[in-house]
Image 1 (tube, rainbow over the protein chains, first blue to last red):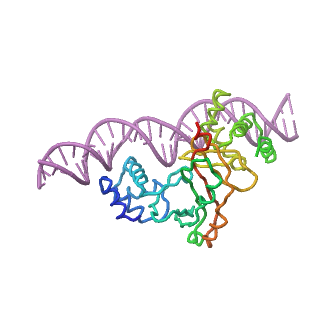
Image 2: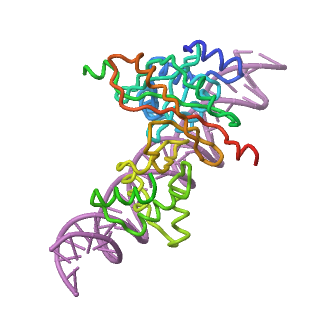
Length: 137
Length: 137
DNA sequence: ATAAAAATCGTAATCGTTCCTATTTACAAA
DNA sequence: TTTGTAAATAGGAACGATTACGATTTTTAT
C-alpha cells in the first residue's frame, strides 16, 4: 500500500481527502515501521503547531478499518504502519527503531489442526529484537 | 506453576508471603485463562472491601518478573495468567471467556532462519477466537 | 517482644485514548 | 462560482488503566 493507493481507497469509499489526511498518510509512507500515535502527533505539530487528538485517533481508526494501516499493541501503546497489502505474512519488529522485516512463515496452517471445534478469528505472530542497523549503532 | 510452587519462589527469593500475595495467587490458580487487573481488583474487593492499586500492580509486576505470571497485551489492557512452566508453547485465547488452550507449535525454529544478523529477544504467537464452550453458549 | 525492612494504604498524578460541542472545510449541485 | 450540507477538525474535558508517593501497617528475623 502506497500513498496513492490509500488516497484512492479514501475516494472510492466516499471519504474526504483533507490536507491532514494526506499528511498522515505521507507520514506513514515515509516511515517503514510501526509508529505510535505520539510520533504522528509530534510530526503534525511541527507543521501545524497544534493538532486535535480527535483528528489523530479518528483517522488512525478510519485507516485501520479501511485496511490502509496495520495495527499492533506494543507495551500498552497502539502502533501503526502502512499495510503490506500483498501476500499474508508476519513481522520481525525492532524494539529500538520500530522498523520491520517480513517473515514469510505463517504457523496457522499447522496450528489450526490443533483447534478443531474452535472458531479462529485472528492470530498474531511477531518477533521482537534488534535489527542489524541498530546492532551496529 | 501451581500455588505452592509460586509461594516457594517467593520465599526462596526472600519476598514476604503476605495474605494478599496469597490471595492473588489463589485467584490466578482458580482461573485458567488470561485475566486483567480489573478482575483481580473486583475479586479482592469482595474480600477486603477496598484494595490499593499499588498492591495490585506491584504484585502483578513482581510475579511477572519472577516468572510466576505470564503477561499479554489485549486491547490496551494487560492480562495475566499463571505461568505454564513446563515446555515452551503458545496459546489460543478465547476472546469471550479468556480461557486458553496450549498450541504445541512454535514457528521460531523455521522463522529464525530468515533473521540472520538480527538479535532475537522475544516472540509472540497467539491465536484469537472462541472456544467450544463459548460457541455453544 | 521488638526493631528493621518490606508491604500496603489512600490518593494524586500520569499516560494513552475517547468523547463532546462548536466551528470550519471539502465537495457536490445549482 | 457560489452555496448548502454533510463530513471533518478544534479545543478541551473526561475516561480507564496504570504509576507514583508519603504515611502507616505488617512480616519476619533476632
